[in-house]
Length: 227
Image (cartoon, rainbow, N blue to C red; front, side, top):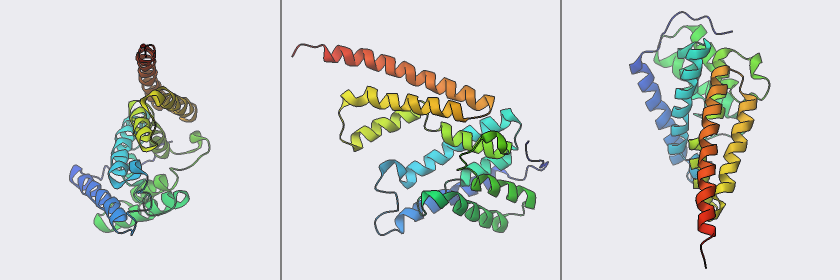
């Protein structure tokens, strides 16, 4: 069931201020660490990458929430804050830390209903849940599904290509790396619960399969050139 909150308390201006806060928080998490941030050594976990991921998740979560009858304001604010602590705490506690940061922000910057704040923080706290998504509120489920789907599809393929360079692989490994994206997409399709998320997973998997087919054909032509 969705959260019964009739108010739509978050204005576009307030949401933009939240975005700026999350961006600055992530940047500070990196800059204040002696070695450049807890995860800075992993290039796609820089503050820039993390903020981009968050914005992607916001867009996906809003799409899912709207089509699945979830409260869109709760979902999009939870999505915005869900990884705010990712660069400064360990993975297994980042959800709880993010919920605490979000609660402090939401209770000190605006006069939001307590039910709204609680619902946002609950979704953030539970976004790493590994059980059956059907057991969760629509808002939390929308956030988790969006988080899962962000690394599926063309975006996931681009991240794998980036990883190839970081691992000093050659272009001949590309098809293998793209296959990993397909496997991740298949796992994601099995995990997501809503029809909207299933449809997004299907579209994204189709794109990556096309890319793999084109890539395999062109790489074969390269391999067949006389030496």
